[in-house]
Length: 295
Image 1 (cartoon, rainbow, N blue to C red):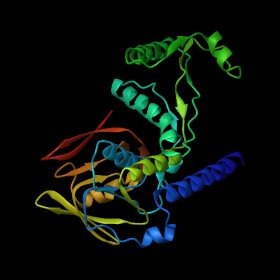
Image 2 (cartoon, rainbow, N blue to C red; image 1 turned 90 degrees about the horizontal axis):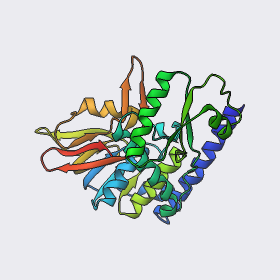
Image 3 (tube, rainbow, N blue to C red; image 1 turned 90 degrees about the vertical axis):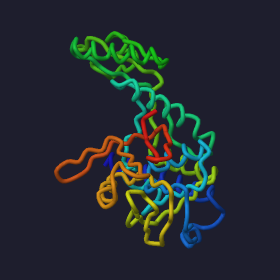
Image 4 (cartoon, rainbow, N blue to C red; image 1 turned 180 degrees about the horizontal axis):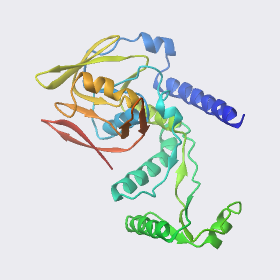
C-alpha cells in the first residue's frame, strides 16, 4: 500500500510539472504544440527527453549553441527518468564523479529559482556506515578526496551517528562518514526544469515524435528520419536511454558526428539497466563532433 501511494504522489507531481513546462514553453495548448511541423534543418538534434537529453540541451544552450532540436517519442521525463531514485550523493570513489555529483547538486539547488519549476530538492545529508575496519578505511579515503575538492564531509563516531539518526542501531558500527550537503530531488521534475530553461534559451522541443533512423553518409551523420519527417543536422546526440542501442546499432557508434550518452549502461542477458549520469561537460571538435565527458 505504501509503495502504491508513493507512486500516485510521484505521478501527480510529474503531471503538475508537465503542465507548468507546457505553459512556460508557449501559450498554446498541448494539442496545438503537437500540430507544429518539425524544422527541416538543425545544427544539433538530441534524441531523448529524459534527464540526460534535457541536460544536454540545457548545457549546450548555456554554452551559446543555437538551432538545437530535442525529440522525445513520448512525454518528457516519462521513461526511465521517472523511476530514478533522485539521490544526490557526492560520496564516490573517483574524483571526477565526485566533482560531477557536486556540480549537479549545486545546479539543481538553483534550478528552481532559475525556472520556477519545483524540483523537489531537499538537502537531507547522508551517513555512510562502517561495520568493519576495511570499510572505515575506504570511507576515510573518500572523505579525504571530498575535502580536497572542497566538499564538506567528516568521519564520525558511532555515538555521533546515534545523535544524528536516533533510530539507527549503532552497536556493531566502528565509524561512519557524514556528508551534510547531500540531497534528494525528483528526477522527473529536474528534467522538466532543465527542459524549461533550455526552451527559454531557444531550444526547440517536440514530444510524441519518434526517431526512426539516423541518416549516415560517408561515415558522417547528416540527419534523422522521424515519424513526422526528416531533419538535416550537423550533430546528433543519442540520449535514448534503454533504447539507445536500437539507434546505435542501426547506424554507427563512436564515428562521425554522433555522441552516445551511455551513462552507466550495462547490457545484461535480457534487459538493460541504466544508472543515469545527468551532468556532462561538452568538448566540441570539428572533425569528430561532440565528445561527452563527466564534469
